[in-house]
Picture 1 (tube, rainbow, N blue to C red):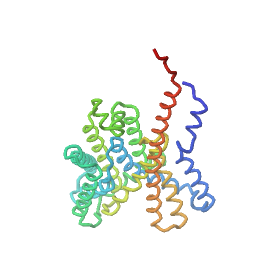
Picture 2: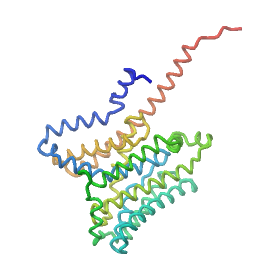
Picture 3: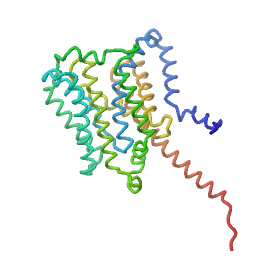
Picture 4: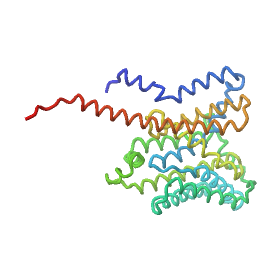
Length: 340
């Protein structure tokens, strides 16, 4: 199949890869504004590592969203599993080799319970995940007594601190999770069915697709990934902190929705999510290095989320209008049959 000039123009258009153009603008602005801080190699290495867990949380939110389930409990899931990880290590003295799989299994079970509430009890995903978020926050406070859990095995800290080829383990884990998620969503029948369910669940059900089964599987997978992010968070901190997990929600959702406007024209996708997440992180890091107050972070992510959702909705509407326009134009050009 030959590539036309129109294909190249679309691929390079601002509408298709706006995040890359925004990154270029941010890079130029901060390079001229604070070059002595922003251009340091250590800043970029720390940025790559610091956002790895946010990336895993974003993919944990992305997978259910492809099936039409907005999970607002992602931050609480990360936080609960981080506290559970610290509790198992510090209080019960569970070996690391058993603790990590146990936490991931618990994360999957949380996703399963959420999915059953949605599919069996017919509770809307937003309400179900909000309720689950509140329950998990209560669980975090109960397990930790609203205090940090200290005294963890120092060897656990090495999981997040270890490096291969100069890159930390969480970044490699993010890369592996992203590749597997991309392959499943883009190259397998299950991925195509997930997108079909998210686009129109009723049509998917009429086509014989198991809508509830796919939503259940996506929420279980998302829960397991959130648990993985939580376990790595505890490794990074070498403690269980009940305050840090919920803060993952806003950056994760912002990355997912902004990423849906990249490369795939309004469709949730792995590559767009990862690119959007790091572009947003560059903006936040630049503002931090410039001495902006901490509340600017929340303002930046909040405005970005609103813009991302608006852009994704505009893109879907625009594509639908274009498709309708093509059909109408085709009908206008269709020659009329002579009357008998």
